[in-house]
Length: 211
Image 1 (spheres, rainbow, N blue to C red):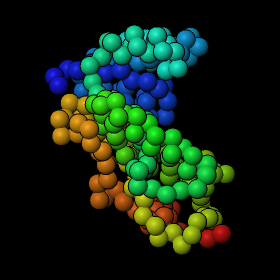
Image 2 (image 1 turned 90 degrees about the horizontal axis):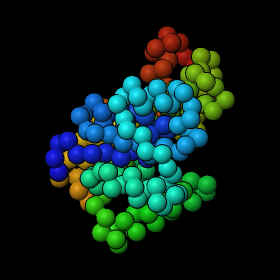
Image 3 (image 1 turned 30 degrees about the horizontal axis):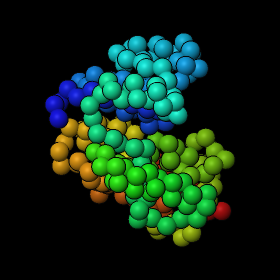
């Protein structure tokens, strides 16, 4: 594929979508976004896309005609919303298991239809997942007490959203990723929960109570 391939982003206003928009534009791709009319009616949304020189296509992923019109404008392979774990190699319980099974079924359809693809496994969104150290009742990391699930020794992979987006965009024009699963897991980004707590304690300059 040419380095200036055209990119269509569905979910461009979402948690990871906005980072992918910015990475696409920064990499020099002509970038399109499929946006619902009610979403685009918001002034700040219009200003966001205009400031990033993104061409907005009004439609919905569930509206077959608008989706086809949008897809005809671009020429890249399919990168589905796989961000997270490798759904074919992870075991979970509901409600997570139902979501994993649905994503796995999408993989099978893509393979059966011979649609060119790259599945991105990015693991944890660092900014989103550790902004409160997995303490759902808090908006910032705890300063006194922290709850640890299990023994805290299981390892996780934490990647910044900007890095995930840039790797995703780079995969578009890299033939090595065609019909492959791309794992974003640099060794320095792998931590146990206990290690994350220790890093935060060092930053705070004090020990937290475990509860």
